[in-house]
Image (tube, rainbow, N blue to C red; front, side, top):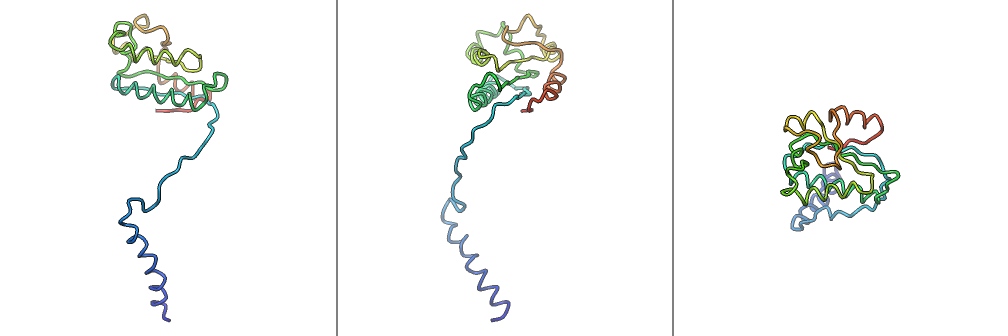
Length: 159
């Protein structure tokens, strides 16, 4: 048998497999969930949400991560740093129109391992002063400096 014939004899069956599977929508099978137990950690979320819907999605991610950490208030700590268009949503003036969202955000702070920190510089761009913001939010001078400081303290960065 020549090299060419031997090569064809080996390749032809391999080439037929994808053709046979082409009619199946799962040529590579399907995924499986990998079970994992995540160890509690320190995390900082860098948040600049465009609107209430985007903020709600981020709050959902924060809540889900906290649940993955089994709500461990001793070893897990999550800081949400706010510095975008979500800032006005946290004002007492906008409470009635954002009541459900703010109650959800505040409820995550009750155990003490999740906190919100708002950038004063970004808030000023929205004409928001610290006294305009709900009491469960801490106002810090600058978001970027806060995020850098938290990273130096060992917080993992999430966008």
